[in-house]
Amino acid sequence: MNIGEAARLSGVSAKMVRHYEGLGLLPRVARTDSGYRQYSEAEVHTLRFIKRARDLGFSMEEIGGLVGLWQNRRRASASVRRIAQKHAEELEQRIVAMQEMQRTLKHLIHCCQGDERPECPILDELAR
Image 1 (tube, rainbow, N blue to C red):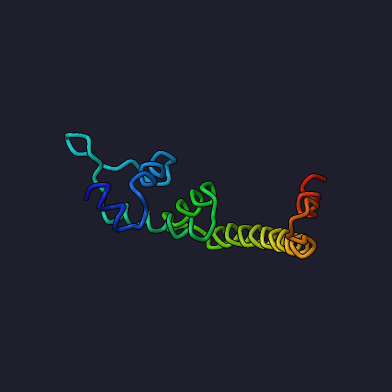
Image 2 (cartoon, rainbow, N blue to C red; image 1 turned 90 degrees about the vertical axis):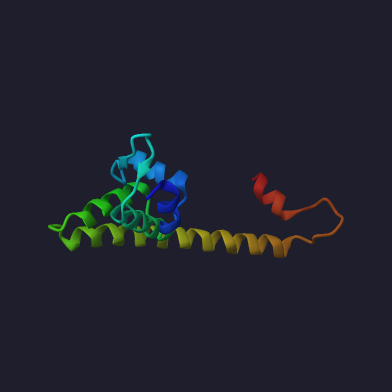
């Protein structure tokens, strides 16, 4: 199938298909005599795997590792678990940081009169 069909079936844009191929997440695919890429169901399956990993917030480097482990039937699941555990911990840290940002913003919004006067604690805090 062509790149448009592979993109449609995987839920990944054609631009991202080429990007993933360039990064080595997807192996170089066969080409027609006129140079058009030809994708098999296996490549579409790999694209779906990559998309799902991206949806879960894994980095491209982590996805590369996961794809390699997924394709290696002799892998140890402990290796996969380590990657997922590290990612979950990083997500937790980002969530805590974002919650702190939200609390700070809510406090600043509460302190701002939102009237015609020029005084604004939100701007004052940003200027600190």
